[in-house]
Image 1: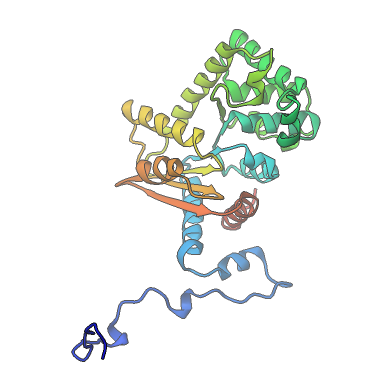
Image 2 (image 1 turned 60 degrees about the vertical axis):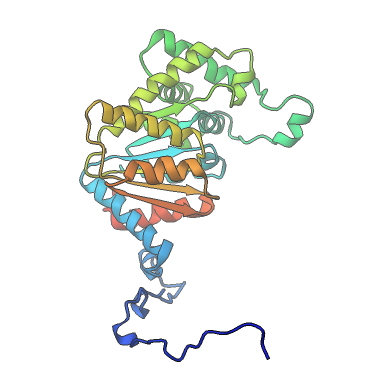
Length: 319
């Protein structure tokens, strides 16, 4: 005989499935497509209307709605976005008027400059760290650091605009895939937000802390100005920045609200390969609490961002 008593289920009450609240029906299922004769729009419509596929659809609708209403779509980005080859995707979205402001950490600006000027980036850290040459590419430091010093002294432009202008002035051979240069050409705000000591150009003799700080501070104010437009609409996308851009965004949003702008009622989305605390709190949850909606998508940038861009373009008129 068993030592422990078992509950009887004889008096459990059941209900009819006909009256039960359910979340999924076959109408929500994925649709099978013919890979040879299917347009991208048909493929996008074939995705299931369940969980993250539904949320991705909703975000796409938010972006399309924002641009039709002439509300901002602000991209916050880390360096990995450039390193995995997404510059052409971003340039295309800029030219189509989808992205209205690009804010990046300073590592992203380094990869953009190196690609635009010399045609390669993303050095082998493990190898170069062994002999102390990691981050010591002279041309990179001289290009960026001297541009910032000159920009601080001679203009009122910020970090991103200064670098974009210099790429264009020097006729960087790959400037067509430069986010910095494209933004300057199109007069779309582009800002760089540096954390001193985090990047390779900070360890070189040309580094000027005053210039780096001043130029980044100017860009912080440019970002605040863009965020002021996030009233009853707009979208903020954070792609691949786990710390710097979520923190900068939260402070810039606070300043905009402190100045009296009703920057509420917009959507935010975080895209990264793993879920991190700061993007979840400072991008997805806190800025949209009570007003707006936050999304969090986990996946590789080189897959997720082209998918997002193509889905948006499928719903916007051609330009």
